[in-house]
Image 1 (cartoon, rainbow, N blue to C red):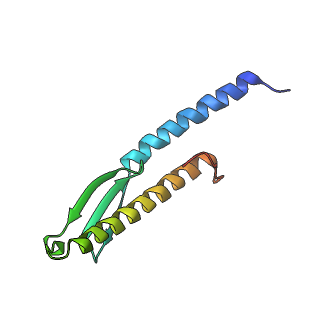
Image 2 (image 1 turned 180 degrees about the horizontal axis):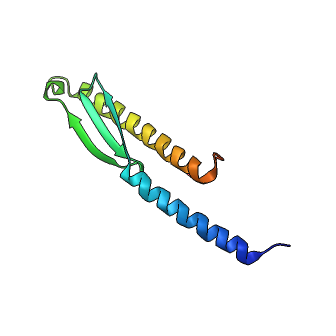
Image 3 (image 1 turned 90 degrees about the horizontal axis):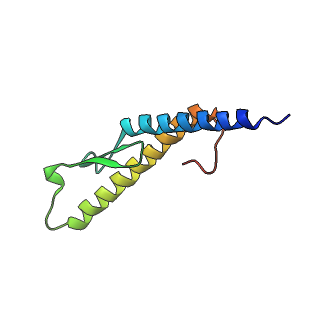
Length: 103
């Protein structure tokens, strides 16, 4: 027989686990770089950029476009790593089952 109270408890437990996983992901960081380390970006598991470092020798006033491209490449790489981190953490919660509405 279908037990509504048990289903509601399971939903509540899953929600609590999801919130705990999200808090843990926010504490974890990933790092990506471009241009041989000229630009370094750190992101957390909540897909937030938390740090950008640019080596002084990467700044050429005559070629700002190159620096912009390096920043974009490093940010995109950091965001991809952040998504992978979140998916890995979510996999722990779902037993490896990918849920389409999650991340």
